[in-house]
Length: 195
Image (cartoon, rainbow, N blue to C red; front, side):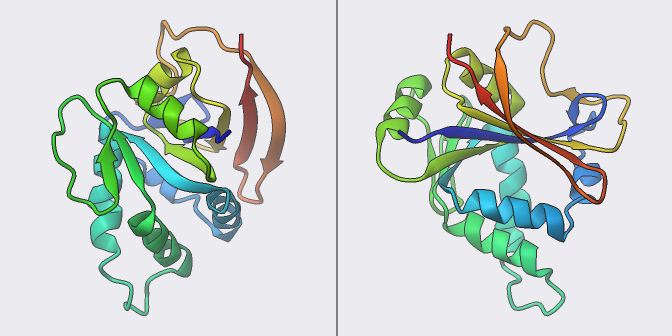
């Protein structure tokens, strides 16, 4: 069975973005060591899953950025990721979007849990969900997330969008991997226990 892997960047004080969605602090940490880990993870998945906001942020940046593959100054890792995300199927949860223009993108059906459960039963590699904390909270509650990969950045934001909102349900996690990068970023990998 395919897994849903949730990948998220977090500040030391528990925020996944600044108050206006800023991610510059996370992007600043994307060195070769972090990209190597990302590329290893990308090799285990064949689809990306998003909530609406994260999808639109990715589309705004990567869809149009990928139009510059011939630019000699394009960093190799970003160029490779832009190609990967362009070609990879993108599954999007949204109540407000009716049409998606980015290639290989599709909306989840009205019953998102049923849709995701079906995808997990299909053959193929795993599914990787980027950010999307509101959608992820719903997915956790529905018992659909199998692994949680948190990258804790050595930065304190002081204010922003919390990774886990007040009132989130209790979930038991099992640590299955950890690493500290040379830049001081802590990577944690958890399996989500089933009740």
